Image (cartoon, rainbow, N blue to C red; front, side):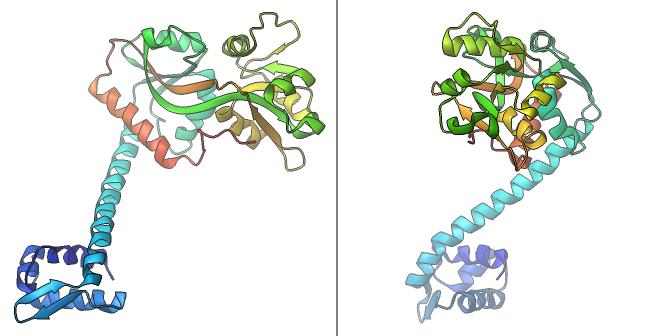
Length: 312
């Protein structure tokens, strides 16, 4: 059975004869009769009843008509989505403008696209979050940043943002470091393990938001690019305050079957938002908007990372 046969079958809706339906389907009446016969053979039931007055759908035919409409509509949507995806990939292969990534986004999203041969013609810069946000005030730059609206109260007033991914904030720790406390909350994990702050300034503000703590003397401060953070996490020297999206990178690069990493979210829901940041009232030009939209769709279509669920 071919999808074309199902599409031809739709012509029987509101038709009173095979000749009328075949005219709607733009094939010969003989060819249309063969389509109906093929469908009836494949489905094992009578779809169309013929009599002296013409032809009409049987009860089975009426039931199948609803499914046929859905199947044809879904097939057409799939064709359109595939055409859009091909066009999006072409846009991302050819774009040669300026793109700035905050350091966290450079370590997560940039490899995702560049490893697929996308954005390789762009002028890319890796910047601290503050410097990346400054770039977002320049019209010739597309900026991808990690910004938590709960931590930066003026966020909505200063920037527009197209969200690419969301990660819940929590604590990442090796299983052997947690011991019997594996089932405890993130708040309890912090009480029993040394803590390293990941992506220093933003995560300090998240820590203060969650606990109201301003004294960070007992916290190991590490940046996203600090090798010591990765080594310490691998050895089990401390836990790390992070988000569920970046946790997937830790898990793949540091976690082992013998000592996997565990992500424990806070009871209070705090999220990191990863997306395209743009100064308010500074619109993208047509070419930039096409790139942003293509990246949003391509990430949703191509990524196998579940960025909306914090795994334990």
